[in-house]
Image 1 (cartoon, rainbow, N blue to C red):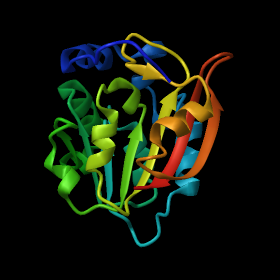
Image 2: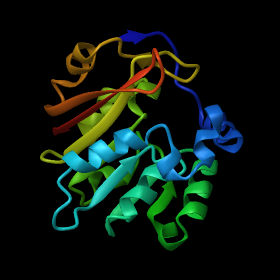
Image 3: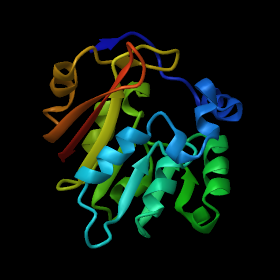
Image 4: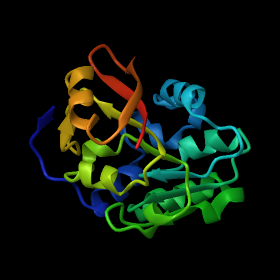
Amino acid sequence: MVANKKEKDADFYNQVYLDGGQNRMYKVPYQDSPYFPIWKRAMEVLELKDKPKILELGCGVGQFAQFLFTYNIDHYMGIDYSEEAIKQAKASNPSYKECFIVDDIYQTTWMDSDYQIVILFEVLEHLEHDLAVLARIKKGSQVCLSVPNFDSTSHVRYFPTEQAVIARYQEHLQIGTLSTFSISQKNKLYLLTGVK
C-alpha cells in the first residue's frame, strides 16, 4: 500500500461531480460506467435473497444504486458528503429520492442502523481514516468494497497488488473473495467481499 496525501474536502468532490469526472463517467447511464463490470460481479457474490438492507457509504451520483434498484432492492440508503453527488443521485433515481442523503462517513448515525450489507466502491482510498470507518460497521455485516492500484489527485493511498489489499484489510474483515479488474492498460481495481 502506498500512502502519501491528505484527503480532499467536499468542495473538491462537488466540482468533480459537476464536471462529470474523468471522461464524464459520472454523467453516463450506469451500464456505460467503467465500473459496471465490477458492479455486475459484486451482484453475483452478494447475498441478495430476502431483500437485504443495504448501506452504501460514498454513494456518489447513485449509479450503482440505480443498478441495484433493477433487482427490486427496496431497503437501501446511500450517503455521500458531496451535496452535488446527492443532488445528482436523487435526480437520476427519482423514485428513490429519500434513499440518498448528505452525511459525513466518519460521523453518520446510519452506521448504527439496521443493515446487512455495506457497500464502499472507490471510497476507502480517499479516506485518511479508512480503518476507523470499517471499525464502525456492525459485526456480521457483509462488506463489498473496491480500491485501486493507481494514484490519483484524490487518492490518499493505492494498492500495487492484491496482497497489499489483503494486508490492509484482513484484520478488519473476514475476506471472502478478491477479484482484479483492468480498467485500462495499467490501471486496475480490486473488488473485495467479506464479513465484518
